Image (cartoon, rainbow, N blue to C red; front, side, top):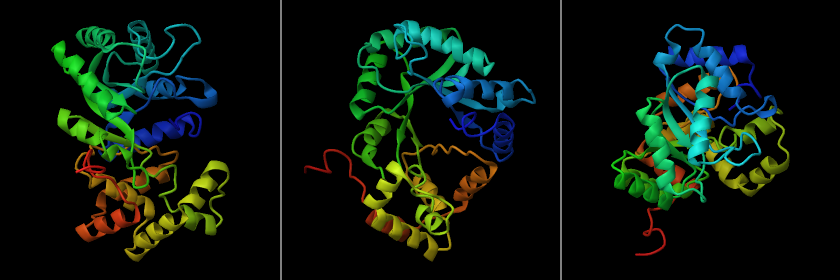
Length: 303
C-alpha cells in the first residue's frame, strides 16, 4: 500500500525485483490502495511492473482485495455479486493480468448473504479469473459462517485470513486463529510492527530519527513500559527490535507469513533479516511476559 503514496514507481519496481531475487514471491495489495494518487494507483504500479516481462507475473503469487467504495453509486463497493464482478475486472485491468491467485474480501459485508457472495466467486473461479478466495479482518464466527455456506455449495471457500497480529495486538488468538486452524486457513498478519511501535521507536525517538505526534505519541505513552522492556530484550541479545517482532510471528504455528510493507529498499533488507533470528523457548516465554497473549476461547475466560 506504500507503492505510489510513499514510494515512487521506479523504487517500487526495484523493491519488487529485489524481493524476487531473495525468493519472496507473495505480493499483497488492494483495489483501494493509492492514497492521494487515487484508489487503484498501487495496483497500476504493480501491473506496469508485470508488463516489463521477465516472468515477473509468472513468478508472483498475486493477492489483492475488494470491499472499498471505488465510486459513490450503489454496488460501487462491498461484496454484492455485481461489485465482485466489476471490481475483479477492474483489478485485472489495472494489474495487467488475466487472473488473481488470491482474491480477498477486505472486510465482512454484513448486508450481503454468503449465498450471493459465493455464487459470484464460483463464477469468477469457473472463468479462470480467480484461483482462491481469502478474507481479511474477519471475526472467528464470520470464518465459520463463510465456510459453512461454501460447504453447502460444495465450494472450497476461504483459504486464508489476513488480520492485524503482532506482539502488541494479539486479540485474534482468542477465536480467529482457532477458527482458521480448524478450517485449514493460513494466517497472514498485517501491521507486524504495529505501525512502527515494535521497530525500535523509543531508540529512534532518543536519537532524533523519529518524531512522534498524535495517536502515535499517545500509543507510545500508553505502552511505554512494555516497549522499553521489549527494546531492552532485543538489545541484550544484540538484535534489532523489528527483527524480533517479525521473528516472533514466524515462530507462531498458525502464521503462514507476516505481511511487510517496505517503503524503501533498506526496510526490505531489515525485514529479511528476521528470517535468521531464532527465538528459543525461554525467549518466547519472556516476550509473552512483556506482551501477554491469549489462550484459545473459551479457555481464556472460562474453564
